[in-house]
Image 1: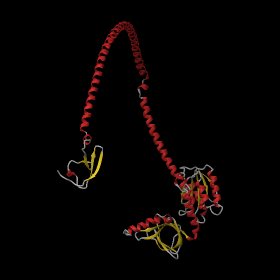
Image 2: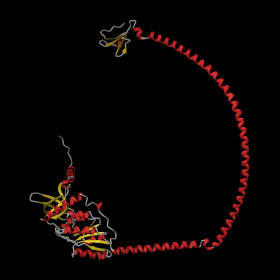
Image 3: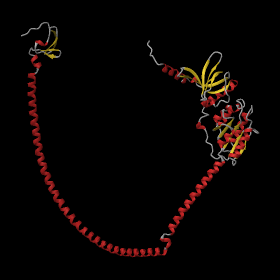
Image 4: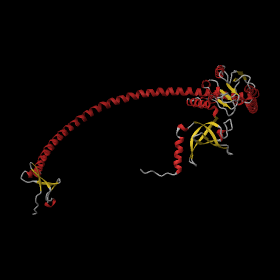
Length: 464
């Protein structure tokens, strides 16, 4: 079986596309030891991940490794999460890492990634479920640990940034076995309190310290809340499940306050700007209305209303006299119209009687004339009918005679008539033979007689 020759680039591209289309090779968790670590000026990390039997080339781009909260070095045992691909220029397999964790917390990190994938598949992280934050929240619920540095930072930021808001605290432990239940209880109470927004905050810590915020029950509780919620958990590099489920995630507790509230100085500046705009708009409106008032005040109606009234009175008097004259003229025209109408009715009565008499006389004369004309036409039609019947009978006799003669003539010239006298007609290939040259020895021919057809074969041909 022949095979098609392909360039190396096409083969490597096919392998790369095969790797990248395989869902098993996406989001792979791999544990191993870092070796050959190289960090150029671009900020990307290039290294190998190995164990006692195999090694794989890895790369972690700068925008991803900025989230790693420790500095890796050769010999560190880590857990990577990423995709398997092919580096086309070298034709080598490599792993593109998206996250890196020390191997000591591998079990927790594995649980975190599995639960994260599960909730993401159910749609709990979809942007369509995120509630918008109010522009100017006045009643804010704060859920954080009591007597913690994160609480003090949040309250200080509130007093500096948005001191006019009413802050209601719901203290809850943010670390340990009882933290999840207490936080859920605080969230449910705050959700029923009619607040504009809820802040869930905690300071930085290790993965174990922040683990209560990766609880599935807590994540589902936040997803089902009616009040918008902002989370500020840990430092910038820390990301928990509640951050993915919340409406807005901030990088720190202080950042959560900055996301949830406006700066009062910015609001005051905006209010001052709007106040100045309103004052300017009122000045412009006032000046416009003043000019309009001046124009109305200078109108003749207001400057000399008595003169306007006199002019209108004269005009009304003139119209009244004109109306009186028109009324008198209308009465005269109505009288003349009544006289004309009476004369017209009398004339119409006389004319109608005369016309009716003339119509009666003409109708009688027309009746007699029509009767005579009808009798005459009936006589003429009777004569024509008799002539047509005679002509039809003569034509029928003539047609019958002519048809009989034609039948006799056709019978006399009929080929069958000739055949009855002992003649025959010979065919070859459905064609009548008139010359012996039209057939050859051995041809099949048909001989037509008066009472049938004979199939024959040519044995010999004689001319003359």
